[in-house]
Image (cartoon, rainbow, N blue to C red; front, side, top):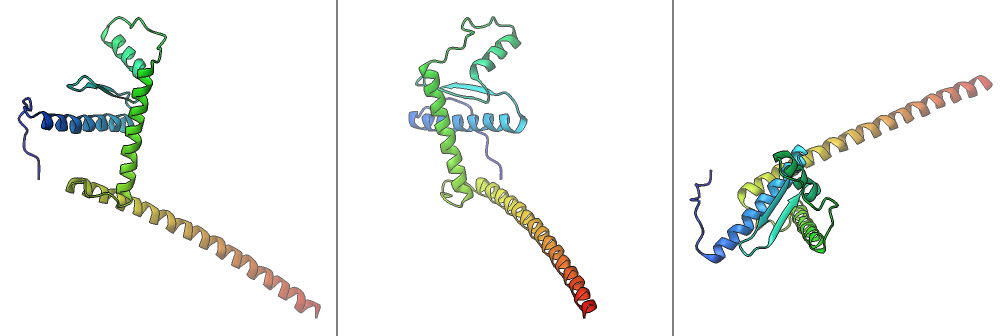
Length: 175
């Protein structure tokens, strides 16, 4: 069942607008991250909240990506080519990494069957498919390991059996 179309106009309620901004920003950053991983793309996203706070995601160095963009569209190179890293840059980077860690920890909890109340039906179905795929891979690997171990033990048994036959022949000839 698909979602209805949302009329694109400014949300008048401040709280609703902030909640929508936060959710859509997180969705945008998640999509940017997924695009960078799945397609090995160099992705950079910069978003400013209505209050002026900056949010960013960069799959590679943000400065390098911006310089690449400027070069691609024919804009002059920035005057600060030595790429000085300011305290604000590192604070933002740390904040982004914390968010990423938090997101990955939440994902891990979901995979462990914890904190599922916040997930919708679509997310639950996707999680179930991922877990089924993982279980199938684990079972396949386990089956292969058991077959390898069985073959190894069978070889050892055959070798031991052959040794016993040789030993039996030696002792019967000696008598």
